[in-house]
Amino acid sequence: MRKDLLTDTMQPKKELVRVVIDKEKNIAVDPTGKKAGRGAYVSLDPTKIKAAKEKHILDRSLGAKVPDSFYDELYSYVDHQKARKELFGDK
Image (cartoon, rainbow, N blue to C red; front, side, top):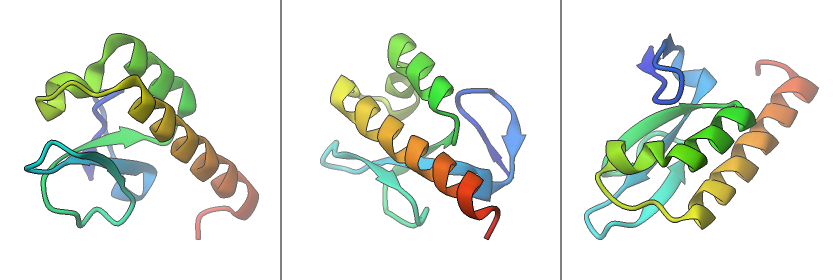
């Protein structure tokens, strides 16, 4: 179980995606959950990602300014994962 930064609820790790920032302040989506650096978990809900972009929620958690382009990348990833999950189910 991990805490979803966007909904402030505990959810299974499989239901979330990790966002990580490394020592060089590079921010990336971490689908494996194994990259080195400070991480934050967010839900696989595209509407929550849009709200996070508006409020810059990841900035506080990661301790750095997250560019809007990253939120767009994260939205695309989450939207793809949600569609994949709906199509193929929980595998």
